[in-house]
Length: 328
Image 1 (cartoon, rainbow, N blue to C red):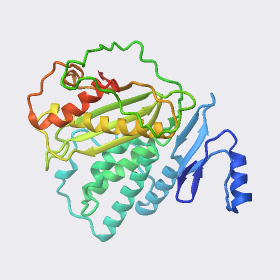
Image 2 (cartoon, rainbow, N blue to C red):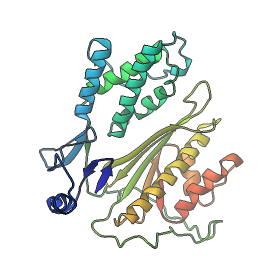
Image 3 (cartoon, one colour):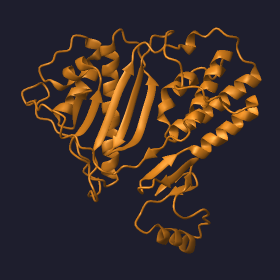
Image 4 (tube, rainbow, N blue to C red):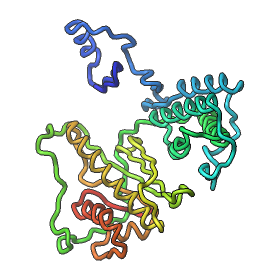
């Protein structure tokens, strides 16, 4: 049972009996019970082949209605990307918005942030970037927020499909190394001893990680982007500026890899406590060959000391047999 304030999402063999128990035995007043169709602003439905899908269609429609109330027309649908390539909003020098414009801008950003939470992770980095200017936005920032709304309005039919089959990675060449003679020795994943016994089908985790060097032209900070999948279903996503500027892609990618590993371990632990059987190995995919080789090869050496903690964190998990790090 997933609880969000006073909203319930129930997944069980006989949910109606559970609802009857809440109503008859505990005097709960429930409304809208039945097969899930709308929850927290997100629509739920099934494809013709029976696959469960989720999409914030009604929420985006309501956002477009508010947009029309603000600007007199629906968002433009001429955009093929949330923001232009090589666009740096932090360098915008257009006039600052007045108090009414700030209120409109903050309203748009708030709606866009919730849209990301509802599954539209394709605009996560753009929304994260524009959220930095909520306290003192400029006219150019408002134009960019309107562009993101237009992109979402154009792509409002995007959905997340709950594909529960495990992905087949048998064709991916994975080289097994002997880490026993490395500095890490014989290490294993720490399995919670107080977790319930796992029941049901196994799940396999897949993680995609990347970094954008020098994302912010004012601070030099990079951005980490991560997408987590449970079997073949997107489960969680992350886009955030890194705390410290990096002078090379290698550093920003390793910081992103460490963040991905930390989140992956947290997800594995969460599923263990939920009683879900988890496959021994998770798969992490990254696009930087140097980082992947440095992490996956026991004999690799680190030449930049300030990356040491990220370096050893990722390598320890690989040595423990928790995950494979694969170059894409």
